[in-house]
Image (tube, rainbow, N blue to C red):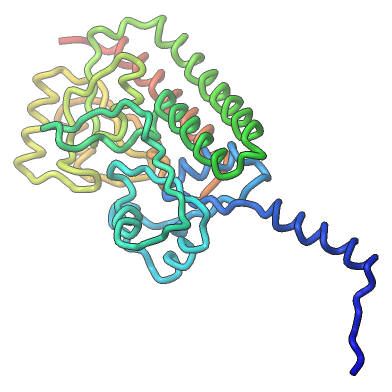
Length: 299
C-alpha cells in the first residue's frame, strides 16, 4: 500500500497562508437602521463588512423579520442596535433567540436620553442629532474594538475623524444661529424626532402634531393642535422630508405657520455618507427656519 506524502516545502508554504486567512477574516457587523450603517462604515473602513439586517425600502416602525433576515442575522458577529424603541423588529427577535455567538452593541448606552411624556419611555431618535450621534459613534467603535483588538487603534482613529467632521458641521450652523435672537421663536413638530437636534441649539417644541410617529391625528386632536399653535404663536412647523401628510396643509392654512422639512434618515439606500449629507440638510434647514422666524411678525 503506497502512502501519498505532501512535500514538506509545500506544507511550509501553505500553512502560513491558511492561518493568515483565519486570523484576518473580516468581522461581519450588522446594523438595524440607516444612520448606523453610516456610523459603522466610517468606523471600520475596509477592516470589516457592514450588513443591514433588513433591506432598504421598509418602514422600521411596522416591520417583521423575514426568514431571509433571520438567516442574515445568524451570519453576523455583532449587531448595532438603537435599543430604545426605533428597532423593535430586531430587539424582539434578539430577546427570543439564543444567539450566544452574537455580540449586541447598544448604540445608546452612553447617550443622555430625552423622556417622553410620563417619563416611562425615551425618545429613540438620537441619531437625528450631532452630539448624540458622536456619543453613539464612540460607543460603537469601542464595542467593535473589543471584538477585533488588533485593529482597535484604527477604529478609534476613524471614530475621532468622523466625529470631527460632524462637529465641524455643527460649529458652522451654531455660528449662524448665534447671530440671531431666538428667544421669542416658537416651533412645532409633526412628531418628536427632532428633539435632540433642537435641544442642541437651545430650542424646545411647543406642540407635537402626531399622537405617535406615522399616526395621523384625529379631527379633534388636529383641532387641539391648531389651537395650541395659535395660542403659542408658533412660527415654524418641522415635518419629515419626503413624507406626505395631508393635515400639514390644513395646519399651515389655519395658522399661517411656515413648514420646513427635516430628514429622518431612516429611508432610502444604505450609504456611508448618508448621515453627513442628511445632517447637513437638517442643519441648513434649521438655520433657514430660525432666520425666517426671527424676521416674521410676532403677536
